[in-house]
Image 1 (cartoon, rainbow, N blue to C red):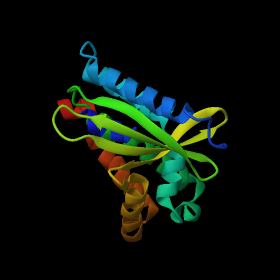
Image 2: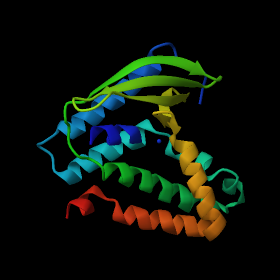
Image 3: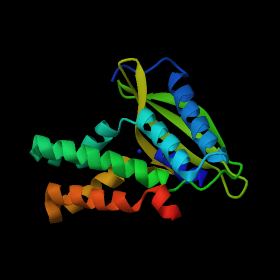
Image 4: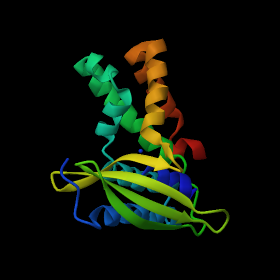
Length: 196
């Protein structure tokens, strides 16, 4: 469903007013385009949605933040394996939720600076069935490109929520155990596999 798919969408000074909003609006429009594309197979739609996530989100930065202090404790090999596993899980998790377009309207409402580097963009999803959903997107610019580094859905910080979950897993199973769990979850979450 569009609402869930868009919520997935989890460096320089703040961009000029309107740039971050335009960036988030374009991502939302692209996601709607994927969901409306009845002429594509599920596998093709999954691949298109994957591109939106990879281009729109700084998955490496989010992944390092989510692992918190364990990032520095991990070996270089563990760091590389973790970032691969984390990125793949995020992409598959939300690609697997592609469920069609039901007339939702995605609008970038406003933006405001957040700290020295970021801009918070407020969006609203108006739904034919149900109240609107407001989401805040933290956008950061780097090397002339903008990327989303966090999402707050109805006041819930997605990166912080994931961070607490990963901390619990690493305490019980270690970093290698976390990587194995992420890989196992990814293998179950392909939209293509879910359709079979």
